[in-house]
Image (cartoon, rainbow, N blue to C red):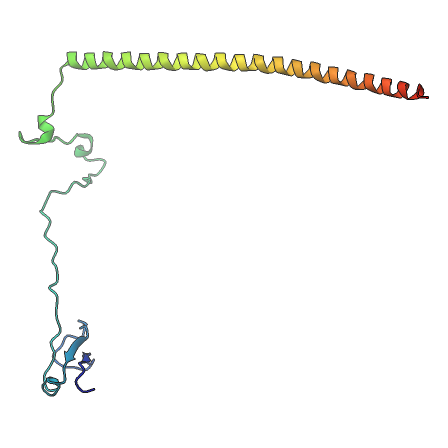
Length: 170
């Protein structure tokens, strides 16, 4: 039984001197064999410590927050002028001439007109379908009333013949 390996857990005591009380230390686990048991009792066990990962620093950049200016100041009514560097993406956006804008406007208006015409045609088809369904419903309703009246007449006729036919029995 003395040949089996054993485990020790070393927990630092609260009253130890030379350590910072605000920093907590994890208990260390030491393993000993019977051959080294006598030397391990006299020695202090060091725990395995993993390196603490550090987060890379973010590059400094200009704040994009709002600029607070008093209302009665001249700066409040004056727009902020943005100076763009030649390499800035916003400065490289394509410039459109008034002819290009007019052509884009015409194309957009034509597309909107085509879409509106398509929607109107669709709405007109739906309206005609609703009218056809109403007409069919009215026809079915009239036929239903006719059949109910016809069945009612047949029932009264069958009652009359059944009561009159019962007297004629021998």
